[in-house]
Length: 96
Image (tube, rainbow, N blue to C red; front, side, top):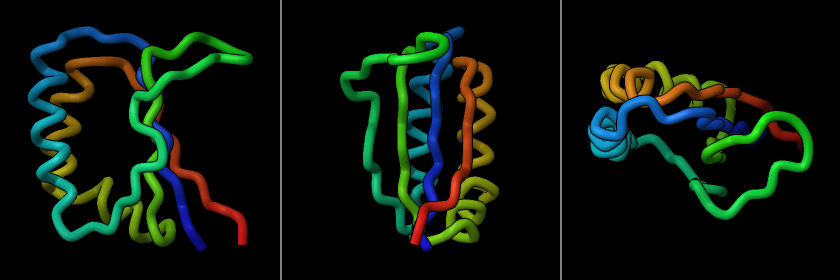
């Protein structure tokens, strides 16, 4: 069953760190099968707090999403993301 990583950027803190994150996160894709469904496109907040940006990534299942997120390459990239912006990152299982 497909699983989704939803990344919600709440506030940019350091654009230079985000630039490093962007480069390293792209490289961290490696052999992981990731299907980007939404990537910082136009958005409209219907309820709740505003968001600067939203990313939705599709994976084959929860284990595949966890393998990517916990991979050494992504964790190296993540170190720059947390310095560059405040995010909420949610892993959610799809429906059959």
